[in-house]
Image (cartoon, rainbow, N blue to C red; front, top):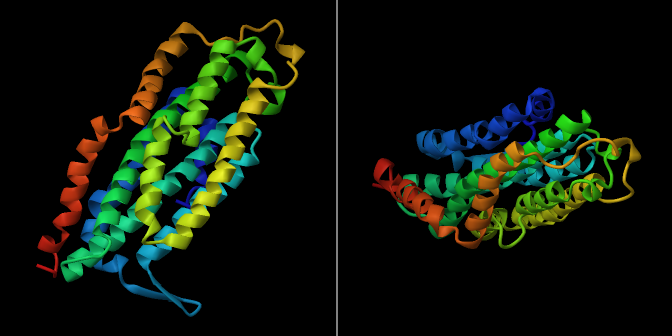
Length: 298
């Protein structure tokens, strides 16, 4: 969550490929899971408590939604400015986890109201947004792990992460290029792939609750497309750098075996998400609808 993200790019820069895949794919979600399972249920009244900032009255859930929006927008801006491929993917995680935070902000507001009053006008929106947030955790784990694997694969062969030193690698590594584009499009949120489903659900759920913050976050999606396409252009397109003419740049069999299951899940989840969404929805609905039983709205 912006602005507590500054450690992440440095951690990914120093970590080996497997470490980056584990950090982005699993560990980055632990904070969001903790919010959903512990922080929101244990402190429901705090999230809806009024807060006055410069004369503007909101609540802590609204502040969290504002930070989530900044994570989406500024994460995309920061990613666009990178030349180190691993730092680009790291900042993309800030961007994508902003959608998780946005969904959880809606969760916190609805849960707090349900706990205190026994009812909330945002229940349906919260269920949709929370489903999207949890699914985004899963989807980001797939796409970011795949992107870090691809970043590590090309670094293993060239011993540089500077994208300005690549250029035109498609002609020497077409299979790698195809996988790179596929995984990048999943990260971008292209319809038909996994990222679209979860981001759309978060936007749909948050729209009626935090309309303007959601609008600004959607504008941030334009810059998400910008840094994804910039990365594809820098790595695969343009004139081929003759420095790599004697290097074997194509993806290796072991690397393909590692990323193939991720690609299959990206496609299946994008085309038929109910296989995992039904599981998520059962837990999310239970958490939100039982808030009044646990709280003062009983």
